[in-house]
Amino acid sequence: MTDNGLMTDSSEVPEVTLAGGVAMPMLGFGTWPMRGHKACEAVLTALQAGYRHLDTATMYANEAEVGRGVRDSGLLRQEVFLTSKLRASDVARAREVLTSSLRALGTDYVDLWLVHWPPRDHRASVQVWRDLLALRDEGLARAVGVSNYSLPQIDELAEATGEAPAVNQIHWNPRRYDAGLLEGLHQRNVVVEGYSPLKDTNLNDSVLTEIAWAHSVTPAQVVLRWHLEHQIAVVVKSADPKRIVANLNLFGFSLTADELAQIDGLAAR
Image (cartoon, rainbow, N blue to C red; front, top):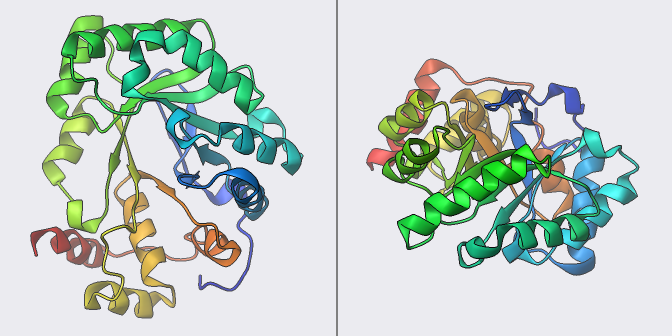
């Protein structure tokens, strides 16, 4: 489907089931670094276009605007999957920060709460993971996970608590494709969620442009569809209304095995 301004039915967006049975839409709308009115308007536009997964963080300083966008949309709270993140510098006060985030978002719970970066002290990493599990068990978060963690760091959490993160959100795009990392996370039942999918991606690369031409879509849409074909949830950001709509229009085409292999091969260049 080309960038034709058509809205996408939110039911078209596939979901992945996280550990614990929480369903997460595999296409999320990113909000970094938008703030103020711009952030609120972008969130509202995204929800009107059909997004049902919003990604924010304490560090972004826009949780209040994200919450306002949800309220202005008229959607029920349970219709929108909200992700926020805890800064590594705040791991010693996880409960306080989550309470503040919930107040800013205007909700009683988040659907997914992540540790934004691994703390330098591995002991703090294990402790904050215990804290996240406890806060989840209290109902303040439906699922908890991490961001920017390595496999050994995830193993440390699982070995200490008996439970691995539901999600690892990492910087991901064709240049960063790593089959071994994907397999390692899959074996651990950790869902991979990619952020900044178009950053550092040459959208003029002949591999992407030729595949895009074959499907009458844009190279950006090819990259986002590539994530979904690999069962990688993806968070994409734009403040431009047309791009917000186009980035969601991924369900009128699919990639062949050969096309996937060609895109995978961009990491080797």
